[in-house]
Length: 372
Image 1: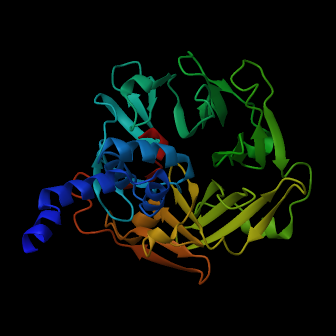
Image 2: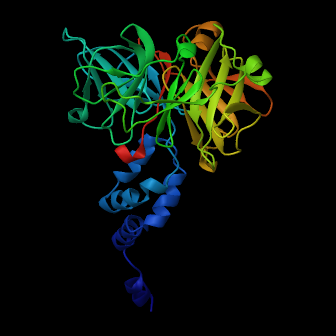
Image 3: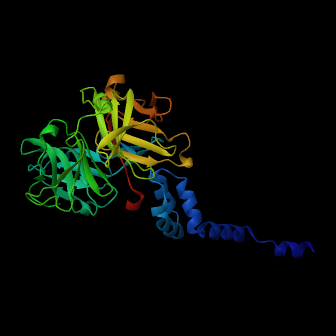
């Protein structure tokens, strides 16, 4: 009897093989549940590299996942720092780049080959996908849907305005600035397929943009009406403040304007296109967090898997002025503003996240799971 029982019992090798087959045969739905609890893009990449079945299942779930958490840019052009785990990530930028900046999921490099042209690339994709752009001084850049049109905020023909360019073109096509916005063009953002700027809030007709002489500018908020008392109080531009246009991930897709006072306090406004006014927002959604930085901002939906690392109804900022104000390049200079308590606190990343020639630069890079 004992011999029969021993014979019926599966061997250790058989049990191991069966368990391995069980893990590799996880359904795409189960893989989606697991991945939704993994907010870091690097960990999602490790998940899909385990085996062919997991890679296939992950590909089926990409569009259903909450956005991955952003990375912090550093003074080292090939090194990024994950948030909030502080893990260092090495990605290729451009070996001959003289300077570079991060804009949303893109890196803009100024080539060091003498002609000063610009290279725009996604560091998660091959270098063959880089876009060549004409030289210009650029403060913000946005890649429009489809990647066939690039919008930039900067100085063109001696004026601060928004300009458009198709990759490979020899020059930018500036949009004429309105007189009242000549000195207050502070930010641009893509929202619901339209490009908006923040002077008075204006939208641009992307179908006509990039064509010489095309009229693309349409004022949305602030057109031919008196300024409200709230706007006079909250939207007055001063040297102590920074502004960020942030598309909200919440239901309804609001366009928000965030005002930072040295990173010590924040005010949030919502654009009401129907009434042509800004209205103050006292809180965000419970599952909504805003990430604002020197060269690009974004709202993300938080997941329960983010735990204590990222929480809703908060603004996470990597503001250069705030960093300088509280003392150099300490990782704790990252800040979070609680919209509920109206308080600001520093965020400390794990020791070793930064080193001597790898320091935070006040910008976020927002990688996309779809680019893996």
